[in-house]
Figure (tube, rainbow, N blue to C red):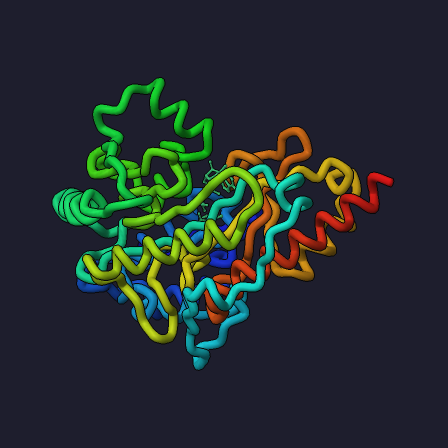
Length: 344
Ligand code: ADP
Ligand code: ARG
């Protein structure tokens, strides 16, 4: 492979840090699963509007291609090479009292983590047989859960178009055909091996073999953030009894995209803030202060509708899970205060 041609449209951190010199040092390297620098950067090269533009094929990719991944991780997470990751999944450490205001302004709350199995390559380098094996291991484990977490696994293969469209519209299921995932090799052999597990009330869900092998999700209507976090942490520990997740002391939980490393957690609310949406400067000042990201109502790369936004933690590595949720909670409380002041 030769050094890619980057245009001024290429805005990703990958394009920023992959100099010709770094490329030359990485171009003949390969992980045990056969992942190369070409595989790492393909999504960012083909999608110039990528923000990050790099994916890992296995946890080894983060070491083999560290000359590229380290500066990306450092800039995105403000996390240096000698830092260690901290995990705290104890809901008692979260300070997030409920209130009428939270329930009034927050339409729904969702917290997810990404996880991958320690004994398999990540999605971009996995084989079809391995992906099917992951589906089997994870769906069997899920099918043995009981109580509030008990539910059913629905493979995408065989699901009617009407059912999948409804699940996507209701914010429960991932969209198919994302061009970033496509070029990262994450849509190979679609839809085989992919699916969704959920309990009856759809408050506990697990996506299998999307961007990560598991996306473990807790969600519900309204603003009881602690209840959502508690359900998630219970589910994570039950699943940890049944499988080993890919984890290392430096990078935390290993994920295919470097933005998700560490806690792999995105804690979000859909919040109705029509006044703030007309005062983006104030909106942005508060979200920046609390390290939050603003997304549209249908997830990443989507637009807001009716003054409702998806607000979530941006930091995931070098901060604990409790801190990720705390960032979101504290920011949301301040957003609601500002929204109320603007409506007077
Ligand atoms: P991810 O959260 O896995 O990074 P997305 O941003 O694409 O991926 O979101 C996945 C889905 O979850 C989308 O349908 C999105 O609308 C939905 N979602 C995210 N946050 C919330 C929330 N607080 N309430 C309801 N649905 C949500
Ligand atoms: N690869 C895409 C980009 O660089 C997405 C990055 C973050 N989002 C994600 N779903 N991993 O813009």
